Length: 385
Image (cartoon, rainbow, N blue to C red):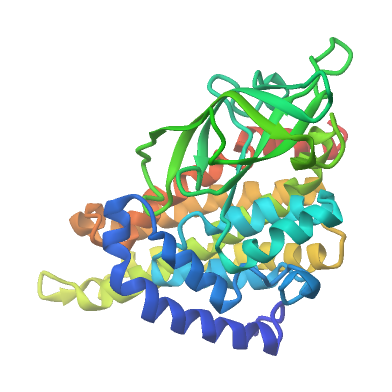
């Protein structure tokens, strides 16, 4: 069936991204995976290409597009090639919405031009050791100074994608203690300069997958953060975080669909070339049936994702809609990619094959952005259960 979610501009952008990946990413990707991060200068190439400025208003150096579909195109093309752009998706899909929605005019003029160029990379720090999905349980504190000019930040964060290379990190911290009546209140977002005294990058975490993106532990010891670097109003961070979750979860759903489609593509190519008992693997009925099942699953995922993309661009994607899309696509992606790996036989277990990387990379999609269990709770609540 003809796909209608993207227009001519999106498809022209797709060709640009596909050519860029072939020229600038694929030849070096194995080295990036071994290094555990993409080179910092690569982010400046993405900036020069216009990737970071797509949704940034023109007055700050961006293209002024409002559609999230351009980010979906990037996700699809990276999956198709079996590569990633490191921590850049956090920079654009997670951090940018907060800067645009809650940044003051002064902050936008100060930060967005270098955000667009890639000279200033960002990350977001929510999760803490021992808290996981319970953001209201965070213990990192930011106490306002007596003269009201700055906060003093203390605490620790973990699982911070892009945390090693970031220049500014959006740190969620308690500026007021929780109360029995409102555990979610009293949390604020501080845009912390990573060159500040007392800011430290701890362990660079060794992950099961996503090896080309750096993930780190961060610690803050009496870090001085000017009040002018607080994002939005004091104490309203939980509300802000909730507001952006539908887009974050939509992005994860797009990734799960794109990785599944790529897995079917890789497996189809492999079984047509691989021979067993004097016959191609593709000639066996089991192979045909397995791939047919996978293709039908991918078609269903695409339908869910496309509908959600249209709803998001129209401002109609609800939290329950996004949770449902994430739950369905990430759970089915695990099944599809596992079947496609099985068709590779022993080679599917070798990291030199993209199907093995997809298998490892996709596992976290059922955890970050809210676990599948949390997604089920959200969907059930929307059903009145």
